[in-house]
Image (cartoon, rainbow, N blue to C red; front, side, top):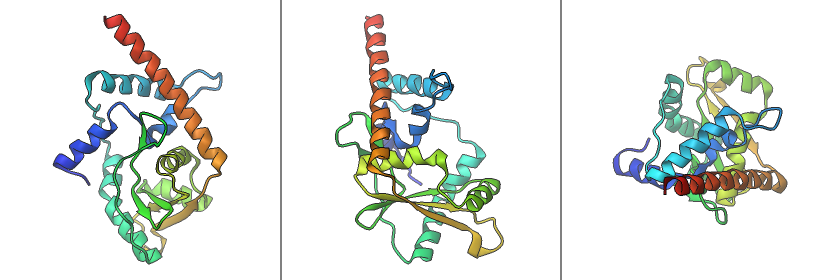
Length: 207
């Protein structure tokens, strides 16, 4: 986990930007095509960050704290499982889309990323039985690939509470098509265009 100056720099780099971890919220629409609450909330949050220059801090639930606490352990477990080393990395701005970026959990080799999750045991069991990358995390991973230019993401779920050590890891590689990544980029551009309109409206109104 980041601390002190490193955390402050990371928060500053992300302020007012659409990041991969919020891509699912940015794409949240109701069946009638209207924006869902998660999307509207994110627009207002990023607008607040733009006009203040400060990141909005979020309430950390027990489940979120657990996931953050176990990230390093999950990476170590995967390294032992795969016999490879994960390279640390920082924040990546998208090469062509302003205010769009990602912070992958790590880099693997020349063309892959790693995304680690430490969910509840019930969720871990659900993912393991399904045997595929959870749909809800694909927007985040596509956004990470769009921002880094890499090919694929190794999705790793980890639950150290499971008694059998051999069953504590769930690993799948996700390599979306170029069309899937481009769809995420298009969605990001649409979301950010709306954010820019809100920013301009606020600025004009305030003046």
